[in-house]
Image (cartoon, rainbow over all chains, first blue to last red):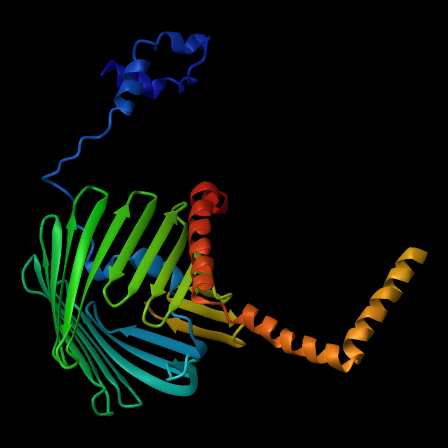
Length: 330
Length: 71
C-alpha cells in the first residue's frame, strides 16, 4: 500500500547506479519490491482463454492495410440514412475493370454502371441489397439466432446462366473457440474451426468439398498476436501458402507485409505496405516483389464527405491505373 | 587526357569491329535477346527467393526500425 503511494510521488529511479540520488534513498525499501513484481510473468488462466477471431478474418489486419479497394476511373458513392436502421445508397462507377482471362495477362474492360442499395441494420439482423444496371443483384443477410449462433447468407444473381452463386453460413461462437459450417450452390460444403491455445496463439483448420467437381481440400492456419504485432500463417492442400506480419508501430501507424505462394499457378508474390490512419485522412501504400506499387488515399473534406485517390503502377507490365472519387454520407 | 582519349579510341574501335563485322553481329545479336529474356522472365526459384527475401527483410526492418515511421 505504502509502496503504491510512494510510486505516485517518486521520480523513476535510475537502473543499477552505484550512487543513487538522495531523493530515492528513502524509497529504497519500496523500489526493489516493484521491480520484483515486474519480473514475475503474468499467470495464464488456461481455462479462460479469449475467444479467437473468425477463421476467415485471420488475416484481416494485413488485408486492411495491404489490400485497399483500388480502382481505375471515377467512383461516386452517396449514402442517405432514412432513419436509425434503414439507409439507401447510390453508387456510380465509370472506368476499367480487370477481368481474369485465359492468358496470364488480365483483360481490362471499360465499364460504367449505377448501383442502388438498401441497408437495414439492427443489432440482431442485418439486410443488405444491391442491384446494378447490368442486371446483377447482390444480397447479404446476417441474423443472430441466439447469443452464440449466427446465420449468414450471401447471394449473387446474374443474368448469365450458371454464374449465380449463393452461400449459407452458420457460425457458432464458444468461450475459446469458433466453428463455422458453409453450404453453397454447386454442392459446396465447407467447415472451419479455430481454437485459442494460449492468450496469444490460436490455431484453426478448414475443410471443403465441391460436389459437382468432386474436389476437396483441407487447410490449416495459425495466428499469433500481441499488443504490437500480428503474425499469421495459412497452408492449404490446394497448394497455397500465405504468411502475413503486421506491426502496430503506434495508434496511427501500422506496417504490414505478406507472402503468398500458389503452387498450381506457380506464382509467388510478397508485398510490404504502410497504413497511416490520421484524423483527416487515411493513407495506405504498398510495394510488391513484382515491382508494382500502389497507394490509396481517403481524405475527409467535411463531415461525411470523403475524397478518394487510388493509384497502381506496374512498369514491368506497363499497367497504370489511376482513379479518383468521392463518398458522401456515412 | 591523352591516355583517356587513347582508351576512348580503343573502345570505339572495338565497338565498331563488333558491330560492323557481319559474323560478330550475328553472334552478339543472338545473345542480347536471351540476356533480356533472362532478366524479365525469372524462374520460379528466383521469384521465390525474391519474394521470401522481401518478406523476411521487411519483417526485420519493421521490428527493428519501425518506430522511425511513427508519428
